[in-house]
Image (cartoon, rainbow over all chains, first blue to last red; front, side):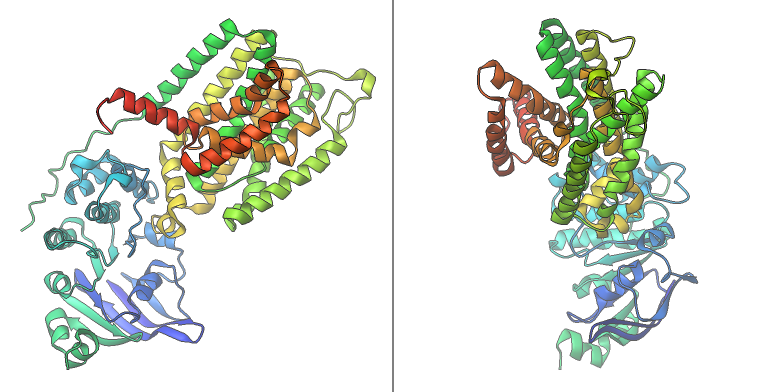
Amino acid sequence: MISIQDVTVQFGGVRPLNALYADFTDPICGLIGPNGAGKTTLLNVLSGFVTPIAGKVLLDGLDLLPLSPEERFRKGLRRSFQSEQVVDDLTVWDNLMAACDNLSPASPNPEAEVSRALHFVGLSQDAQRLGAALNLFERRMVEIGKALVGQPKVILLDEPGAGMSEAESAILRQRLLGIPPNFGAQILLIDHDVDLIQATCSQTLVLDFGEKLALGPTAEVLRNKAVRNAYLGVE
Amino acid sequence: MHEISQPATTTLAVPRNRAALWSIVLTMAVITALTALTANSYWLTTLTSAFALALAARGVGLLYAQLGLVSLAQMALVGVGGWVALRLSHGTALPFEAVVLLAGVVTSIIGMIWGAPALRLQGLYLALVTLMLAGAFQIVIVATGFPDGGPGLLGRADATQRLMMQRPALAQGGTAYFIYVALWLTAGLVLVEYLRLGRSGRAWALIRRGRAAAQSTGVNMFRAKMKAFALTGFLAGVAGALLAGNVGQLDGRSFSAPESLFLFALSLVGGAHHWLGALLAGLLLRAVPSLLTDFGVSGYAATVIFGAALMHALITAPQGIAGQVLALAARLRKPGKE
């Protein structure tokens, strides 16, 4: 469970996050809001790339803020970025193995872990292909596979469905739903595709100008009038 | 809903990359045998230097191609290795191999210290800092010279009593020493390839991809970068010791800052992404000037050729000559395909 307590981030005169409280308890949680609402900033705070000026972030009771991004990785935190980070001149296998390399304690059977993650994201047949040869959908799948090795606790996904076709998005949806039961990890998902959020997230946080607009069961949150005004553009 | 079953996945078979290591050994064996059988003593000395410098070139190539870091101090590090080797050789009774290894270790430590700015800097700034280090080394080594059997820390003798560094007992002659250096080169290339294809190589690749990618994958950037600089320094140190053994003495002018620039530039021309490129860089550095001399052209004309070759590499062949050769070979193997 991720618990965000009174987190404030300040860049000069701007506060991308302002005194935010939120507890994510469900297996897959959504994070939506208009552009500039502070979604990616929140992910950066969670993964250690942005340090808030106040507040606390707890992962299953562990205070994350004093830890470096590398240490957070070892504590079971994974993330993907809006721009995918697949390494072009490593094979699909090595892209995942690179994550296995840095686990602590080391994985007893890294080959089996990588195989299992590749199988889950449907890339078993592509293990020896180079990153450069993959299409966008496959690259996104490599990133998700990479997040699955080493018994992750929380996976933060920043717009994993961006640029995908309807059919690909449907596969992504199925795979995301399969992660909590198969790998025991909680997912925090940013996406602009409200259908994807509705289909996968049981709990959703809506941010607007760095503040919490709504947090609760997704269906309820999306019916909320303030949310519809701010985000969906419905008067 | 999910057809993914928990334990049913089987571990995929992964090729172990042994073939890549054996191909280095095999190629080096063929090249070395052909050269040893055909070259005269002048060319043997030249190619011995070329092979030693290929080790140093592999180091800069590794930093550039694997981590995206530009180091312009590699020839100065070769000089450091040469200095340590000469000092040890004249001052102690250590066997040649121990001298080479110690030169590698000491240079590796210096390489890590010189590489420390890379923890904060990259790109042009790191290039400038390393170039300044190369310049500083040039000033020191031109002033102090290399040890030649004299007393004291600097080990300088007066002009009448200069000593030569003894070659290893096993490899006194030109041909034997050439094969000896080829063995070191092969071992160095295999070591780099082994690390590149394994855990270290994956960490380096992530660092090259970007800070965010590396850190969010748990890569310890400090350790990974220091490992690369240690390896690069080690290769430079070994190269310096082997060069010292080749001629018996070293000249401070051979390790100037421009020489470091040449070494970097020719590593790109040869191809920084592949071990073959390092071999080509060594040959370009030493064999091309000798070839020109053979043809009655001044060896300095090589500089002009290198400039043109660098332009060519930067514009049309980012993988260098090695990349072009390998692409051609791949096309010949699969005729009909693009």
